[in-house]
Amino acid sequence: MSQGPLAGLRVIEFAGIGPGPMAGMLLADMGAEVIVVERPAALRTLGGGEAMNRGKRSICVDLKSAVGVAAIKRLVESADALIEGYRPGVMERLGLGPEAFEAQHPRLVYGRVTGWGQTGPLAQAAGHDINYVALTGVLAIASRAGQAPTLPATLLGDMAGGAMFLAFGVVCALLEAQRSGRGQVVDAAMIDGVGALSSLVHSLRGIGMWGDDPAQNFFLHGSPFYDSFECADGRHITLGAIEPPFYKLLLQKLDLEHLDAQLQYDHRHWPAARAEVAARIKQKTRDEWTALLEGSDVCFAPVLSLAEAAQHPHQRARGNFVEVDGKIQPASAPRFARTPGPAPRPFPQPGQDTHAVLAALGLGEAEIAAMARA
Image (tube, rainbow, N blue to C red):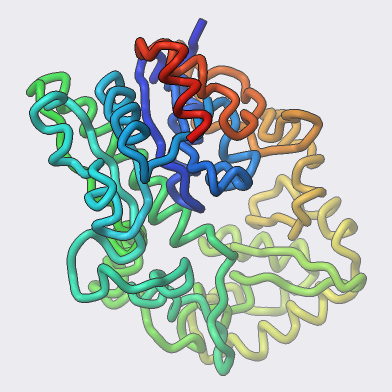
């Protein structure tokens, strides 16, 4: 039996890459029945890789055939929501745009995720995560003085700005539809989502607490107390002692109490203090610093590889990584006290549920066989 806070909901996901499959995974992790519509020509990625398709069902249908489109319309009419991540106009050209369901399924929530959004002068332009983050101004704050900015691949634009906001928007629209009886289109653009995520930075900037000069902004890697530092073994640790009591404790732990903790936010003293902190960190290995600093209020964490992260005692204690089909994957989040989501289930093979799903819609064996031959 289905579990989780979204149990009982059916979502139709049109296979794509990146944020669409991730949003579908988030919904499936919470108990929704997510059915991926895969095109026969794309029998490969199933949308975005094994991890992001865990717990879903998969059907393969030719969306360029009249019989295939008719079958998908019947499937969508059985669902609560649809999500897709194509360029604006693609679903309309397939005959599967929002207007195709207005009369027969007015409660349908129609979720759409793109980089630039459904409207605007860039709506039809190609792009990727790094481009969307750049246009929001957020990439500019991910740089060190004199160096080009860089970001963790796919996390900020595709997943946080795109997938998370699509999933959030779909759930919001589903809640509203319960009251109004009407669905709506959810336009989740990655530039919109990343912009919203930068609200704290804009707020700090508005009150004069965020400077654009990396040499005067501790978030931008110029300070001795908020950055990653290289250790004796070439690996790294992170320090985030923003609050004065935490910085004072950090200096104690590093045996650098001769540095004046009262000057923590005087950026004129940062270069010299930072040089001393960096030199001190270079005297021990990453694991030696971990043994000394982890769990204290200096705001510390070692920089771990993906493999190391899965084995860290805190991650293991919280069950933050699970094994699915013999492969390690991040567990679902967040946690629910009364309606926990199901344990992550294996990803489907492309098209493995085609017959069962179409038969449940009432299509006869002859129709299904004809579609398979086509």
